[in-house]
Length: 380
Image (tube, rainbow, N blue to C red):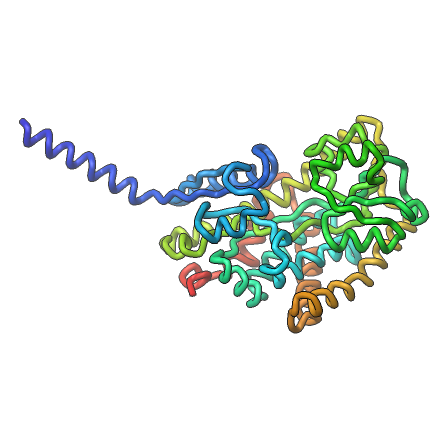
């Protein structure tokens, strides 16, 4: 009887060990609060992987790594995967940030209703398939690039009515990036840098007159009570320097070919979840603003034309900065590649269905992620 019990226990343990071995668990974190778009997109990936692979993903938000800590934390294996904003690290990711500084091209020239989706796809295709320097940068930080993402279009959220070129002169603008700061100064304004958490008080007390941001931030930072005007189409562009689910390189190499294939397929799930999430949230935030009696209007024709002219001129400033300050080579050729990819995706995404993530995720798989060989990508 004792022998039988021992044998049964051994069989049970063997079965458990086999199951445990067949299931690979990964951690995925972001510096965003629970319920915000990045962790929601990460949970969508976790659900997809649970249904389509032997990978299990443990998603955390705002507890493991802050946004400034993400690059080093992922490098050192504090998390297996993470959401990273590359512009937090200008020295480490200058090749990738060149694309991130060109996002204003998404809202000039050929018009698109989904600039964030355009930039997400263009950034991913550039980094994954067209930028050896980007791959070298990620390798140096012990990362493997897997997916992208982008905000919805940037607008002006102001404490007073503004909608002409003359209105901008002498105003103070809270900005979140170098291109938006140059935009403010181009129109005779002053750029002010501050954390998002300080925007409400700054607008309330007149420390700034406007903030340049994507309209979902109206909800995220509860700015409705200090907003008197929302101007769409200026400054334009999106925030697009996003690596939405980079993975630690050592962890990537430890996975099977099948598991790496699943994560490559999942890259489109996260990219779509982030970009479409912001697009849908923008529409909801603008609706709430209107219901609260806040004017939500497109930029005047004069302001739109002047803003577009700035973008064309600013590409020269981008080229000079990345050549002189960051020492990039062949910047003009790289900028042409990025610009061509933005135009390509404007065409491909005309009329795309964003009521669900799948049509966009399928396009990303066909055009980008399916072209990466799981046996060699990130393995050198």
